[in-house]
Image (cartoon, rainbow, N blue to C red; front, side, top):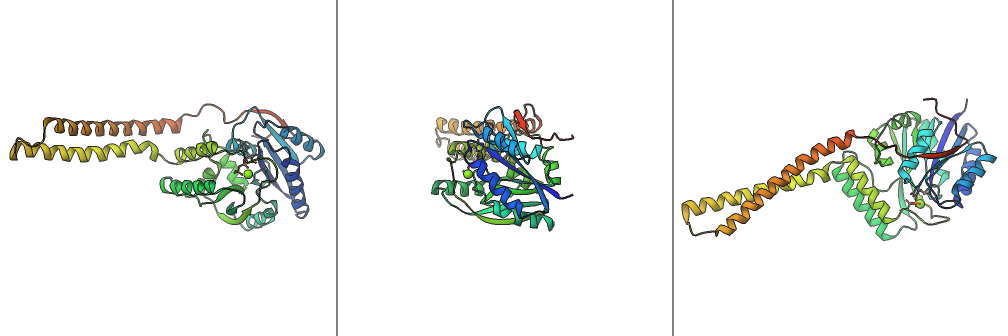
Length: 316
Ligand code: UDP
Ligand code: MG
């Protein structure tokens, strides 16, 4: 039996790009007769006719499958849903707007056949991205690598290949707030890197607004690092130490050297600082407990599927 590759593409208002991507993928695989493939589009609550496009394609081509979300849940849950439903021996995730060049797929497969369990990509130069986006992405990676337990390279994208065994583990991850890339990186495995130049978006506009990107960045920081939570505690320790020493110095001077030095108000001020420090330390402790709870509580589902087309149900 030929090996099967699952292509997963999250879709938000990409009605014009869907047929183009399907065509390009078909073209790529026509040159790779040793593989079969499925193309899973996850419609993330688009407001245009994206799902109709997916549906129409799926009626003509049984390799095209679709998942329709009940509303917009975001790219990360959409990518996750695609991976949850993928049947292939390897899964390739890519954007539906053709910014991730499908012609790299043969290279991915070659690296995979040679033993890589994760093939990740680094974007060399982002055509069409403004300086602000570039700068903010630089700052984000710098901060992320500083504070988090997993390291990611600057410029890595969601254009990736993952072996079935990586995806099988990924399926078991229950967290709601997620960053797909970060989770895959966190898992480790044998990795190979491919560099590429992102194409310009063909149709439509980039919908990852700065607000959404900022949210994603915050999410990534909080799901892989407790530093923001611990910050209050650290600040408290610093304030307590400094004001504690200062207070001791003031009292000692007043008592033993010169009783007229330091007004009572100054002493009161410094004692107050000392107490604020202690309050912040306690907040830091509370934060630690919240972090634990945060890690344990998993309630709502990650996404809601309204409808599926051409999907084979997983055996699980
Ligand atoms: N996308 C999605 N849900 C959203 C926003 C975007 O599924 O809420 C998809 C979008 O259709 C595209 C990919 O995520 O396939 C990347 O989005 P976009 O091109 O807007 O972001 P950028 O290229 O700036 O990273
Ligand atoms: Mg894009």
